[in-house]
Image (cartoon, rainbow, N blue to C red; front, side, top):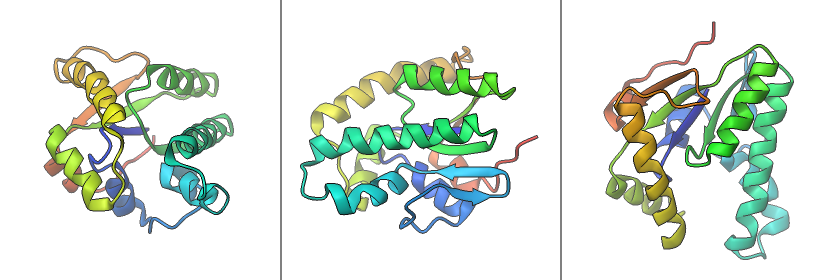
Length: 177
């Protein structure tokens, strides 16, 4: 289960609420057979080593670690609930392929908020992506969410749930069968 949305849409906030994350974790959190993986965990782990580097150099290392952690948990056969960028289709295909090899499936929860709301969320948490990165996220997000809201399948996902902020705030649990 991948939770995707624009930066600032509320992905980490949702994981915090559902799984009791505090935001200071440095590794995936175990919740039964499920691994809860948020990109902050990789950012926190690398912080002591990479803090002197500019964000432009830190981000690829942190994101690579985050993607590797998700892939490793899938390969190990764990259920995974992870925060991810839904705007990287090649990464989604990789996760789906790994899940399929383990007999699982990839499901997406897309948190769809207005770009202005997501941008305000970035400012509120004190982590704002660059204007160039923001424009790229928005450009890639629009067609993805339009397809999902239009009922079109989103390969490689087996299932897609689109939530607005109110619906995300009301979500009580994610269950694996």
